Image (tube, rainbow, N blue to C red; front, side, top):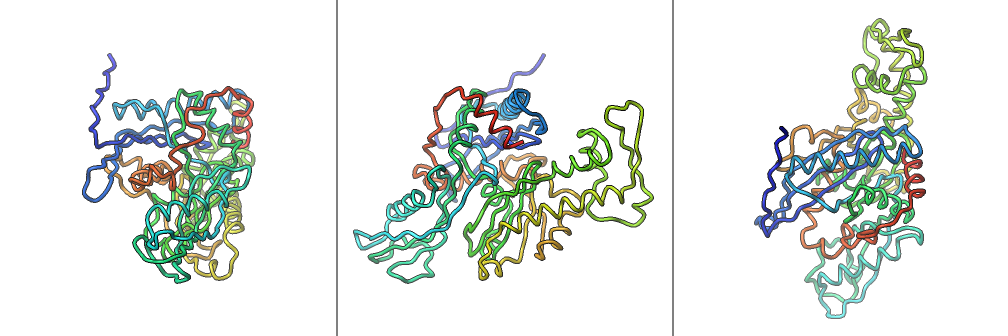
Length: 428
């Protein structure tokens, strides 16, 4: 007989947060308790983790049902592990659907001393200005402050002055995409508490503070896209995504060697490499031929490498094309951090260093209390970052400046199935 999970009574100083990352190959869900009582600020404890495969090659009604099943499966698995039920989730928005813009906002200080409300007002006003008409704001991130023209300030709160100038980076996403994503979540009997940019979340999980200060590019290689986030002088300077990922490598292998997608993925995981090793031309891999039972084709691991390498180089080249082209800013970027499931491909770090001409390391999510070892893999960086960022916001969750607390989609329930299908076609 199946054992029923016990539900733990939540303390008054705890908040329950659920993060959801819908990828082309899998759906991941983290459930965490945020303890508000700790003397060092809010702390997160992972109490539930769920993961469910989502075949991204499907189309139409089958794709809608597959993704809905995957979302339900991931959330239910996390709920069973946590012994909790969640009704709302923080949902990641892929980098290829987000838009960022750097702007400056000037605000007169009525009282002569900068207060938290002044900073909040300047960020809120900046989000309105920076967000295109067809987009909804997701984040407003302060990159620096000037007070009466004097720069180099850290936290301006409490300083005397008459004019506060805020340099900020605002992130938004197309409203129609968010509507379709919200509809999909609501088909799973959940509601969207907040949306957050996936590359921003992944960066929060894997980047060091010194890397952010010195300048770094984070690249999250997923199945359908490669998201990126650029940090400079400690603040987010750019984010987005290239519409090509590790799943395209799988498709290349399947098409060239005549195998099924499932077998191509298995071969890529077990034998795939972007670096050709000694004797690889004499090490062979068998490919059962698609639609021809009993027939097998044989190729060397060197042949496999020749298929993987060009696509991996293309991924990094497409990301490089979207990096800031400002000479001063570009010259300050000297480091790359790779994360996401595709970063585990043998040779990915070396190819990134050669293509981008920057020092590269593999980034894994920073350990969170209660998190199982498997959830510390690069493929879970987005979910881990959503939880960490939610905890770090603390009291700012009420202001809606980091993650929009009052999402326009919260509680919205509509039956726009056509919109969901359009979203799925675009994503997968």
